[in-house]
Length: 95
Image (cartoon, rainbow, N blue to C red):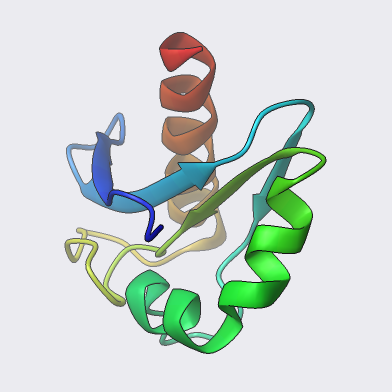
């Protein structure tokens, strides 16, 4: 079953696309390449993600300005940390 894509808002107002699947300890899959797209990654790596989700909670997201996420006012390392922070905060609150 394909995971449902959701959105988390960063502290600087950017909507970050993500999906989660599985249960157990969280494993955050960082954007794989600078121009990541979580839906395409799912289609290409479905078996791998399902294997991981059998033992843990897999969380995968698009960084700002790539895939299904919005562009942001900044693309600095600090801005990408805000993306990760929003995703982790949202995932923890949803548990």
